[in-house]
Image (cartoon, rainbow, N blue to C red; front, side, top):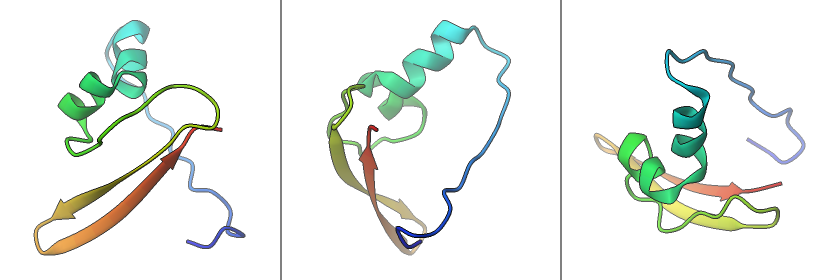
Length: 68
């Protein structure tokens, strides 16, 4: 994906309380537990950036997250 490409937006509903979902996407321990086991750090503040590697079978995906 190039920086000029439109962002990918995914909408999904969860059968969980809002507080549980919010914790899963803003607290590093919960992020590691639910979906990003290798994320080194995360802070829900504008300007924060982190990088990590996601490995799926024999494929490696470098990933960078930024809070905007």
